[in-house]
Length: 77
Image (tube, rainbow, N blue to C red; front, side):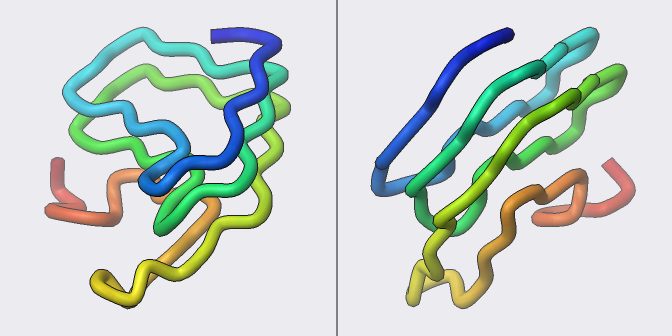
């Protein structure tokens, strides 16, 4: 995915799960809850020039981050 703007939602900005050979480049992720970009159980993911901002705390989960890279569930995956 290249040259995109993803904005304003009630969940995660982008989630990549069980994937391989994914590239996210020159993209903006703005105005979501919990995580801007969450990557889980994936390999060969390239994140280049990605801007993440205005990520809000979800009171149910009590956690939030711009980038969550293999850290939300089982870090060994």
